[in-house]
Structure formats: C-alpha cells, structure tokens
Image 1 (tube, one colour):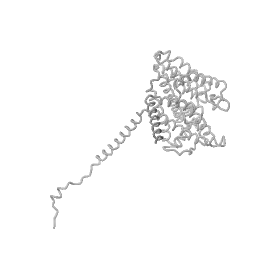
Image 2: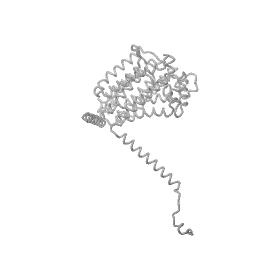
Image 3: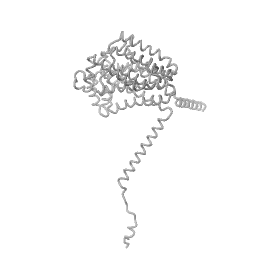
Image 4: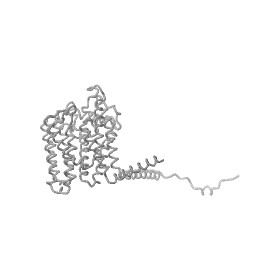
Length: 430
C-alpha cells in the first residue's frame, strides 16, 4: 500500500488563473494592433499613384447610382399621379445620365489646352442664356430661372456654375505671376461673376446666387486674396441677401420660420417640418427603399430639393452619412489633385469645382435639417434634374481627367496598359 507524500505534493506547481487585467490588456493590445495594421493598409492604399483617380471615379459612380435609386423611389408617387406612369420621372433622369456619362468621358480625355480654349466661349454663352432667361424666362415655383428651348426646358444658371469656374481658373492661370497685385486679382473675375449673380437674382433665385457667391469667395481664397477683402465681400453679400429677403414676403416668411418650422406648420413650415419628420422616421437604418411615407404628397419637391429627406427616411442615418461621406471623399481626392499639380489652371479649376459641389451639398443638407432657410437648391448628382446633373457630371469628368494626368498616375496607367498588352501577346503566341 502506498501513501501520498506531502513533500511531493508541495513540489508540484500550483495552478494559477491569469489576472483579469492581463486578459483585458492582451485583448486591447490585439485590437490596437489590428487597428494599426488596418490603418497602415489604408495609408498604403491612399498613397498609391492612382488613389485619387479611383476615389473620384468610385465615389462619383456610387453617388450617381444612389441618386438614380432615390429619384425612382421619391418620384414614383408623383409620376403615377401626374403621368400615369411610376417611372416617368426616372426615365427622364436616365436619359440625362445617358447624355451626361459620354460628356463626362469626353471631358476627362479632353486636353487641358482645349478646355482652356472653351473657357471664354462658355462664359459668354452662359451670360447670353442668363440674359435670355431675364427677358423670356419661364417661372417655376416663383423663380424665373428656366428657359424653354424647343421641347426642352433648361436652367442656364446650372451651366453658368461650370462656366464661371473654368473662366476664372483660366484667367487666374494666365495671371499667375501677377496675382500679388489687387487689381489683377479682382479684374475681370469679380465684375464678371457679379454680372452672373445679378442676372440670376433677376429671376429671384437666391439659392443659386448663394452658390455662385461661394464659388467667387473660394476662387479668391485659393489665389491668395487678402483677408480684409473677404470681410468686405461677406458684408456686402450679407446686406444684399437681407435686402432681397426683406423685399419678398414669401422668402422673408421662410427665413423667419426656418429655425422653428412647427411654429407655422400649415404654411411656411410645412415643407421643412415634413422633411424633419422623414429624417426622424428613418432612425439608424431607415424604413427600406421605397418605404417612405412622406413622399405620398406631404413633402413637396421630394425628388428634387428634398430628396435628402426621403433618403434619410428610407436609408436612415447610415444612408445619409454615406452620401455626405462620398461627397467629402470626392473633395479629399480632388484637393489632393489640386495640391500635387504643377499646372495653375488645374489647381484653380479643381478647387472651384470642389467649392461648387461641396458648398451646394452643404446648403441643401442644411436646408433639409432646418439649420438654413428653404431656398430651393438641389443636391448635386443625387437630385432629379438634367440641367443640374449634366454640368455636374462634366465637372467630375474634368477632375477625373486631371487625376489621370498626374505624372505618377499617368505612368502607372501606362505601365498597366503595357503589361496588359504583353500578357495578351503572350497568350496569343501560346
């Protein structure tokens, strides 16, 4: 019979449990290592030569796709009631996409010298069209900013946004070495843009005038205008905006009620209040595509100015943040292109397009969130409207073309074409 030896038992190491703190530290170390590794991967991807090109191309394509889906959903009820066809409005939008995509492709491949040659003619065409609107324009929702050309009705102010960016960029590129003098900084860009803004205001389109003013200030900032000039410009624009609002009872009513749309819910607050209802109903993940209730007549302009509210109701906070994130991704990639280029025209034109698209997006979103008054301005790329979509697509095509022409990006694309050709030749020989 054997007996246990106490000395043997004491010699064996005791089983110990790892402290809870060390387990948490190990888990945190694993998480932080994973985050650091993912961040390094993102940094490596962003630092690649074609990163700006693919960010611009992918974000623009995704925004356009989301826009078509939301136009279909937001316009389906109105299309059925007005045209007896739920797809009538989205079919028109698809037609503009079919026209706009080839135009954007041509713009992306057009040599920069040809783009610059079109700057002055484009600006003059925009001025003529705006003058025709002032004389023969068609009023829609109180704003006389549409022009009937045969079977089509266009909004020349949207064309003018692209025209003034290219015109101002071309002038500033010519004056690159003389921009330290205030006279060359202001003339002829500031008088020319004031003329465009004045023609837009003749049609009572305060929203578009605000975007044009933002483009003007953005272009002045990027060429190095002194800060005192911005103070003076903002003061003049602020006084002009207040004067225009005060002389229009409907516009004044909207501005005085935008902070609390429920105060005048049945009148001036109707549209912003229902926009807020739509956003609040969507919560985190939305009611699902096509499930919006506000588009059934309660929310005016659901497929144009207030499409962001329908998007929030159907796709939730996640969907709205995705759309805003895509706009800022475009801005990030475009600014990378502007900072890396040696061509002053590319730098000024790219920055002007960013100010235009991002500024208009922020005004539209602020309007839907009731932090800005309702001034009737669409969400770029997403809202319905060929007059707005076509110039926006061409502008994005130009920026994508600028990204393709970056020296490192052009070299990477050329190497990829050579490798593809070599692989095709090898497979043919095999």
